[in-house]
Structure formats: structure tokens, C-alpha cells
Length: 551
Image (cartoon, one colour):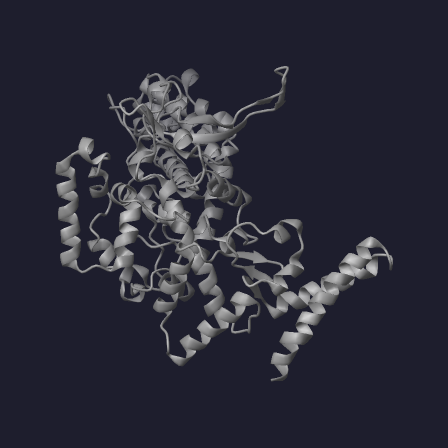
């Protein structure tokens, strides 16, 4: 959680200001007054004020969008999970041919390479001895049949630029998914966009011998690694991002040979249209038309009723069912900013991260984000910011993903808790389990509305009074570290005021303990420890749960 904000943070970091305006629910006249105040502060100037205020006007300051509930939605869990898995499968498919891609693409510098025999002999007057491979032969010779299949299927030279644009779209979408970068930031990525930064330096002993090697973190940035100090911010680069970028670099190297340019000066997403166009083509970034979106992402993911229910839970003030673009049966319309907001939301959601079908790369990425994007990480600005030569210090831009991740934490925690409130209608026990039961009763009796419960829960999370993580017996809402949890002493949850105890989980723990007891020798240390756990679990069940079932 962000914690207490200063006016400087509020007025210079767009995501904080947007959240403030949403929570305060100010009328339009007050919003206009706040706008006017900010304009006056701009006129006061950075030197007198001590900080620059213009940044807040760049990103949805308005709040007309926020006030009307028309912000980009969080992608529903089922759809988000499907997208992540599709992207992972596609990048694996492309990566399998990475060793041949560059040479294959560069071969199309020859204007007749990959064209039909008839075109070569009759139109281009190529001699029989000099006939080049037709397109199918070219793909086979470079062992790329499995790459140019499915979403990327391509049967002729004229279709290759579109197929490569689809590959680039997958690469671009993976970068959005795992970094939260905006469209224009991804478009500005240079060929050399990957680098490493030292998080923890080498540890040496008194003799200068290195005992522990430095810990590094992989970064992606719109500044190349050759420019010395970064002029712009950087983002965490996970395994899937690195794989995707390497594929993009192979494509870029091949295309740069056709453009006859130095690849080190090229954008990562170099336009592949030069393969089919005649004459001099200006070097530039790919423009993704509608047809460049792969079929698996464009039309195959359809909205279901459960998705609408989830959308309503993440944004209760908006009626998604009244919007045609969110109708059941319609394809989910992906936008790059949805990935930014969804990453901020799911990246700190323990419920989502614990899903067994979620790719391990995403789970690893969320651990890195929780470690490096948290506002208490002392090197946040040094690693992900850039050096401001005027201020003589490192600066993290106000619209960096780290701030949205920090703001997304209370929202996702509240959602995890609300899932317990609105989920299976089974009684819950423990300190917070009893609180959830009371909230359910308030909802059923009409005493409270879901929007009120959500607002109250988010407020408690935002104030640092609640957290959430799943446990062997249900869930834990305790704030801060739990020594018992770290040591594996899960039975302390039974008496903890921050616990959520689920009867089914409790029964499973009792059965697990009984199976363990059957393995250990009676009287051994392991047997006594497990027997103590079993006794406490059984007593709890008899004392609380059995009594409730009888009633």
C-alpha cells in the first residue's frame, strides 16, 4: 500500500490523483475548482513550489472518464488467464525458429526470392539455372514450417509482411502484459532495449574475496544500453519478455539487412512492409492494422455471463451489461491499457497468483514486482528511474507502472476478501471469518449494498488494517509478517484474530494429519508434533463447527 500521501505526491503522480478523485466523489464544480487550483500552481512555477505539476494533465486528469465509470476495465480472470496462456504458447512457437528467422527474412532482399516459378520465369525473366526457391521451399529449407502455422500461417511472399506483423503484435502484447508499458512506450523501444542493473552488489570479505555474487535484475527500456545514463525510465523484464524481445531482435536484424541500415540504430518493431513494397521505403515502426491482430486474440475469446459478474465486482458503478461491446457472446476487445490496469490488479492478487493453471513465468514476475515496485524499496528510483542532470538525482516518472502497482494492491486485496463474502455460501470461522459472515447477513437482509461493502473493505485495506493471502486452513488478513506462517505452524491460525477458517479446509488438514500419524513411529518427535496439531484441529472443530451444525 502507498500509505499517507503528501500534496506533492498527489499533485504530481496521475494515478494517485485519479484514485483520490474517484474516492472523494467530488461534484463537477469542485473538480473544476481543483483543475483551476492546479493551473494556478503551474503558474507559481516549479522553483517556488519545489516540484513540477504539469504531469497530471497528461493522463485522464479529467475524471469525466472516471466520473462516468468509463475507465479501462480489468480483464476478467478467465479471459486474462486464457490470454496469458495463448501468449506463452505463441512466443514458444515463434522462439522455436529463432536461429533461422534472421537469415530467412534477409533472403527476401532478393526481389524474386520466394515467388512462384511462373513469376520468376515469365515476368522477371529469370533463367532456369538461376530460379530461386518458391515460398513453400524457402520455409522448408529454413525449417520454419512450425513457426509459420496457425495464427502466423503464410503461403506466399505477399503475405509474409502481414505474418511478421502478427508475430510483432504478439511480442508487443507480451511486453504490455508483463510490464504495463503504454503503447507509445513500446513503440519507442530500440533494438537494444534489454539491460541489467545491480540490485545487491558483490559481498566481499576483508581480503577482497567475493563471497556472494551481485544480484541482478533484467530491465527493458526505451534507452539503449549504449547511451550511458538512462534518459527515461525502465521496467522489469521477465523471462517471457526477454524471449519475446529476442524474437523481435531476430526479425529486426533480418529486416535491417533489407533496409540496408545499422540494426543498432533501428526500432525493435521495424516495419516489415518493405518485403512486399517496391521502391525506397522509409524506415519506421510497424503500424498494426486490424488484420494484424492474430485470430486467437481477435475473435476466439468470447465474453460469458460469469465475466460480466466479475466486471461488475471490480467496478460496481458501471453497468457493463448495458454496453454492446461487453455483450455475452461478443469477442473481448483487447486494448493495451487494459493490460496495464489488469497487471496492477492481478499482480498483487494472491487468489489469482495461486491458480494452478497460471504460467510459472507470471507467478515469478509478480514476486519480482512485489519486491521491486513496492514503495518501500530503497532503490526504486535508482533502478527504474532515470538520471536528471539538472537535479543531479534519479527520478521516477509520475506515470510509471510501479505507482499503479502500488495503487492496485488495495483493490486486489479487497477483491480477494469480497470473493470470500460473495463466494460459496458456507459458514466461515476465525476472527475475520466471523466478520465476513456478518457482512453476508447484512447483504442478504438488504441492510447493505455490495458497493458499500466493497468501499468499506477497500478503505480498511487502504488504511493498512487488512491484507489477504490464502492459507492451509482458509485465509489470513493479518498485516505484516507472521512468524508462525513462516515457520509452518499453521494451527496458530485457529486462535488468530486475522484468520478465515473454512470447514472444508479444516477437515482436509485433519485427514492430512491422520495420514501423517500413520507413517510415524508412535512416541517419536515427529509423531508428537503432528499429534499436537491434530488435537488442536479436532478440538476446534468440535468446539465451534460441530456446535454450529447442530444448531
